Length: 355
Ligand code: AMP
Ligand code: MG
View: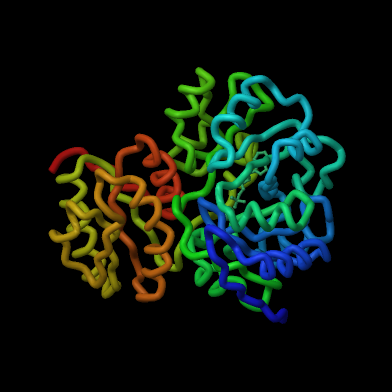
């Protein structure tokens, strides 16, 4: 077992000593978790195949699901990616640093293990001073998937990282809770029109405003698990965001959803199950369950995104057997939130139409 060192850092102006120590770990092939504006990432030198293999092992992540490569300046992108289109240039200029990952054709300099043998590479520039300082001091692009055990909800605080990976990684840079709370948007710009592979922190509406047409991969709107052949991004296939409890997602208009949540709660109680309800500020008062938590106001999707993964983990600490979750509208960040909730439920979705 490794000794995992935690460095508390100032999120705006990270202390140089801690950054240099963390960068030395990256340079010697080690693993460091660090905050980004979306969720915590687990970093390794993206050009060191052994370090990236260790990264997969620490997370227990399947080798066919490649990490995103994080950079701190644009010139790095030109060393990793080929055929960068004018649309991609525009997106980088407008959205970076920020929660948008772009998928490009890759250069042979990127080890196959880093891209899981794909011909493409996923790259982004995070908007977080700790992350940027670490990449700069490491003098290499950093491969960083979310810093959770594979399949668990992504970590939005250093505590979540510690709970999952203590003893499995070298260090954690603790820069406080992350702001956005859901992962980056993944957009494939190796095709035209660009294709959305994962909704995330950069809303689809903003991407369309920047580059016009954006195709949605069928998986984004899918309400069931896709067949293997149809996945364009390997991560689409894997179990994700799942707490220990079974998640049941109830979709529809609010009064009908509320009625259904109450009905399912009663049915679960008859089976002696401990029930958690994941509600919103507007509705949480109406529920009686073993644990009721609010994601935030339906009018504040930023807050819902920021709270979501933490609440899923908290339900596990409360040992509920079932989590009944309300749906929210799919505009803006709502598309990413609903995508995570659908995956967390393993597509156990109940649709209601009338109250
Ligand atoms: P995570 O690092 O946990 O945020 O997951 C990274 C996501 O990016 C996963 O869904 C991957 O499948 C996706 N990804 C990484 N590289 C590629 C690529 N070359 N093409 C398509 N998707 C990718
Ligand atoms: Mg992940």
